[in-house]
Image (cartoon, rainbow, N blue to C red):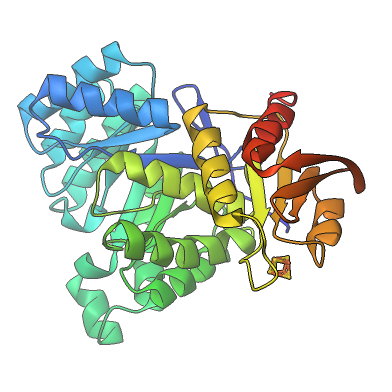
Length: 354
Ligand code: SF4
């Protein structure tokens, strides 16, 4: 996969775009004026592996909370601004590392210019976030309904307005709850500029459905080499978004380290509790936060039909027998393991890479 060329921008100590790793982000859903609850959630997101957290800033108190959280935790924070440009100014004064705006709902050119001036003065990058549900009336009139072309045009118009104000540290996003529209809009915009792109399927749904929609939408684009930061929007605890985002990156082969388990679906030939083994292995890797510095592929196969072939492609793996399994390393059988020792044996091998 060849990654789309995008410019690199800095958000505090974080590099976004260019050849930097894909940034995982999420958004708090606590009361934005509740400092303790918001700080707790930002810390939980950080512990889960989130690189960048967005906080909504609808009031002066919320801007103050963002400032206090920023001082209490070493993680870049993005202020999410809608309608009131003064909140953008306040958030930047309080130390927001980036702001997300939809220029179309800020209330006119003068207000956008004020936001741009503050962003330049405080060296704050801006994300232009365009959603299918909040397109300008003129574009809806021109295209008749939300569509990829309208989303793309809205984002490029906003980028142009900000460029005219001297802004160049921009990130763009064009989102829709319709997966096909989100993908098409991002393909269009990817071909039209070199700004880093923030990917997401908005209002994707509950944990299960939202993860599937996001995996299809975000994953399709990542496999095209498009995208510099992702947010999996779930109707769930935001911490769940981080696990889903990581799994999408894993599936696209874009993780820097970690363990990829290749396991068969089982069939009538399976004579070992392969479902139990694969599930326990995955759970204990997460519980123990095992993180090999390079990507490891571990095969967990039910029998000798496909087992040796898959195990050869993997770093190591097992092929199930009757109440026991064969351990393969570099394509060679190295030992037999009783069923109740299989997970421990694989974990021991993974630990040698951590
Ligand atoms: S690897 Fe063996 S047990 Fe697993 S699905 Fe294939 S034939 Fe069945």
